[in-house]
Length: 186
Image 1 (cartoon, rainbow, N blue to C red):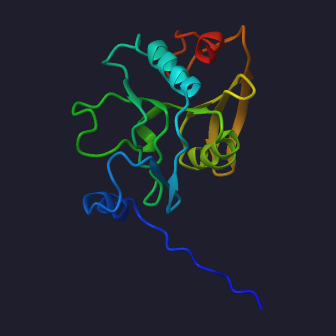
Image 2 (image 1 turned 90 degrees about the horizontal axis):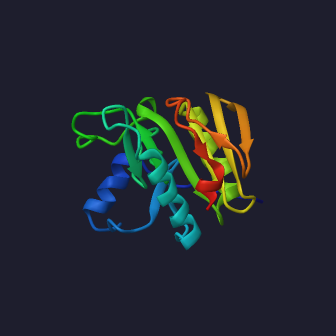
């Protein structure tokens, strides 16, 4: 006879209380995904370099048009608070000092993936679609391409575009900002 084990899922509030209580440390590399505390992969040199290139590419956006976030939490639901590699957020006077950004405040979300590309594509991108994040970029360092996801819905993104070396792409929120895939990939 098979027994179905039940998991104890956590809320974002409980997750934060674990940090306050010292159960989780501020520098623990974890995120809350659908109620589960998930250990994040170590950041390799190529991953870090790609994030720095994205920061450089997006730093030309005027501060009054977007806030650039790097590996900061966003609260998607009561049980999901990932830490994407890069986000462009709607301007906020207090720079989100009182609460983490929510999906409607995200202009662009970028995940850089090497060892976790399947998880990021199959799990996280699906969650971002259900949360109605308007645009997600997945930098696939294994295949050396950029996957751009647009038109979110409950069943995923209805549009996925792949960009390769030699091509450029612009975020929906900033159509005049052409970003080189070569530069992103390094």
